[in-house]
Image (cartoon, rainbow, N blue to C red; front, side):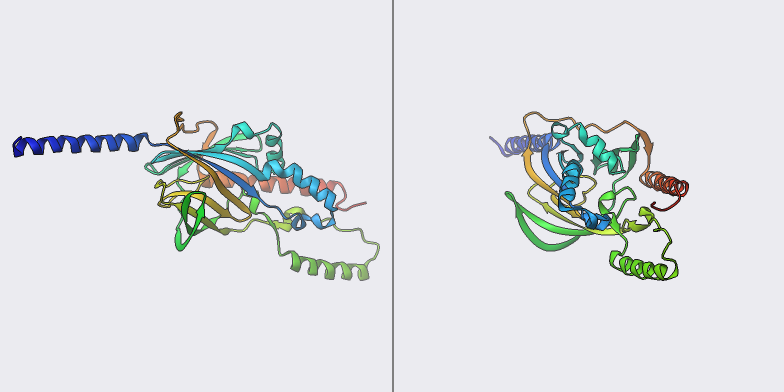
Length: 304
């Protein structure tokens, strides 16, 4: 075999290996199972007046809202994140609506086309949020920890909180408000001890922070820029997210499963951008606030 033939043979093998590698890369798929858990401090919302038994009952009813299982199906460029239908009970839809913010459907992300699609239900109306991927300025901390068999690296970012994110609602300066209320109540007693108790607008007592810090733990052993929900943008699969009172933790990973799933873009609902959807939420909340105040005014404004 002469030199030209040898080079030609090796060249053919090299091309075949590249072609095989590209095919394997395009055919790559993974599936990750995530457990999402949100904690709620009932004391922030008048829970101090409730008995321990009552608190326990409320938390049990809210469990389907606060603890969920999701599945992330991903390849090199696309991902789909949705609630595990096998574990979703019929009662969950109602509890989500009781949360006041509707329910989130599948979230589709494409890092190649910078595409973000989310199926979102809000007060009985179906929306399709169509926008570019949210931008996160991740800061690497150098910290590491083990999650299962994967070595993970810590990164943090500051995130703007959505108007519909009820999980981050909190009571406004509850200690300061309590002091002011006590001073005000004392003054009113001296002024007119027969005056009826003034009803407090619950909308005036809660707030959603403008931004929060998010902590992500990702592994470069799975080099895809994907993660649960809206999160992405790191040089490896995100296995854990800590955002406000919510923790999302990966509990199982399957690479290249035998039965691969097609990653389909959600298509249902009225198409809106992210900012447009936030305006719809804000407007609805203002309508609810006005309706609540009107009802209180018709009812005399106070307790009898």
